[in-house]
Length: 267
Ligand code: KIV
Image (cartoon, rainbow, N blue to C red; front, side):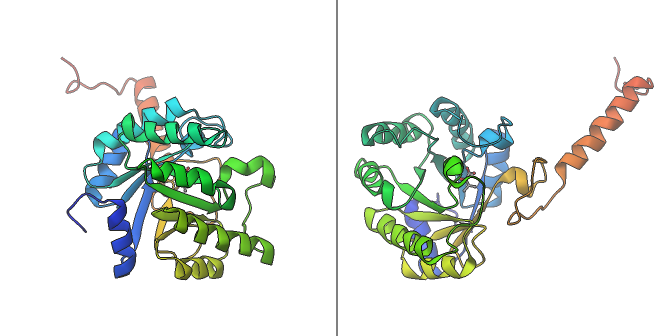
């Protein structure tokens, strides 16, 4: 594990060395501190917060102010990891100047080291302007959850020739525009491999197979804390919802039966 602060340059060096990049989402100080201390390379303050923290069925309604609130908490904890702020729906699609201002807010107010933007070829001019303003950009193509109403459902992208061409062209254009990495979400592993081999910047996969240069997952998914649904690509490393249920049930029973507090827990 590199001791130094991870930067966008570190991302490129890691790809050159063949070192996999480990990314997780976090939305609060305590969780981000654990991730940072364990050596997670990059903490994404994802707009998935709208689903796993706020309980909405999709990512659309989260605002810039809410995202900044979470970014600030995560940035305070991240001494080593690169913190990336996820640009929420309508914070960058409305105009290039909105996009630059909102991206800048993640650095100025949120303490982040860069931003993530969903979209490929159609976002290139916006991405260029943000990067020209000195703000590092992580691209995001494939299943882009902010377009859920366009897709109709969360489904694997890049299955037909036309969509494969769009995704490869998008990755090449995002690299040319200056992105420091690209998230590939829910695409066939062979396509992810081809994209990863076609560009010099690292690809970060989520449901894109093992041949990406790094992987990202939502922290609540790996901890078993989000019970609404479990994506096929998410691996559960803990069952925290079950543990919380057990603990709360024990507390509830102890209070009801007069077993809590004990003499030792009283003054
Ligand atoms: O919002 C998010 O957490 C994301 C990742 C899952 C890539 O965009």
